[in-house]
Length: 254
Ligand SMILES: NC(=O)c1ccc[n+]([C@@H]2O[C@H](COP(=O)([O-])OP(=O)(O)OC[C@H]3O[C@@H](n4cnc5c(N)ncnc54)[C@H](OP(=O)(O)O)[C@@H]3O)[C@@H](O)[C@H]2O)c1
Image 1 (spheres, rainbow, N blue to C red):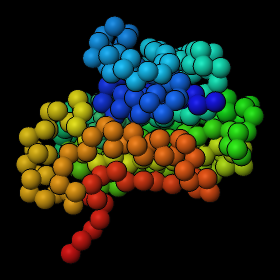
Image 2: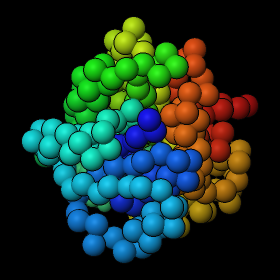
Image 3: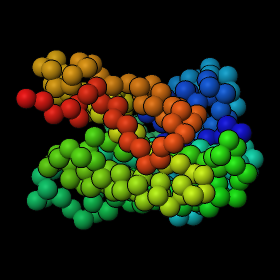
């Protein structure tokens, strides 16, 4: 069965992923912090995709919420074959590493990394109970960032949180391969969403000056296509695989 839980599916990249999966015939459970009625534009986009979807509210930082939402999604769809760990936040303030507060560090790490760790644990325990389909019981796709390997000293906590997701990808991939559960990482570059609105001018300028080999903003659908490729088993002999969706930014050139 094509059943997916997408955390942070209410806006931006997660919404793009939910739309792509719905159009490809998946049933999708969206997890967001607020009720569906708070996102009329997103609901219109999801409705227009034609498939069945469910909406659950919860905070990935909360152990109770993670457990409840995962159980509700599994109950509503019958099972969860795909988990997309997408929910994430930018640092509450951009500031020099020497001024970073413990509070901001904890908030970013708890949302981005702890959320991913324990949603993956829930998914793994659930997927291990499912019958294998074509040799696979389930798939987990983690949305990290180019910040997993690129240093930004004014966004230190974010970089650490995303590097942590890269290690979680490897750990879960290694642990779950014998169970037929495959784990992948999509590393976005700069994508046009609410998260990057505040720095839109800065990045448009840098893109104009040739920062990225592919000279345009990334779009949520660019990330969604990569997620779908992994979700639909396009790489059956790969796990722990990372794909950069960053307009070629990771290329070092002379
Ligand atoms: N945009 C980029 O350039 C970029 C680049 C690299 C990586 N990424 C990563 O891609 C992912 C999505 O980013 P985006 O740009 O689409 O961001 P966004 O537009 O700000 O959307 C963030 C999504 O995450 C959800 N979320 C945030 N905190 C949550 C929490 N505690 N519990 C549950 N859901 C929560 C939000 O839900 P609500 O609507 O309820 O707030 C929203 O759906 C993030 O992990 C981000 O780090 C983004």
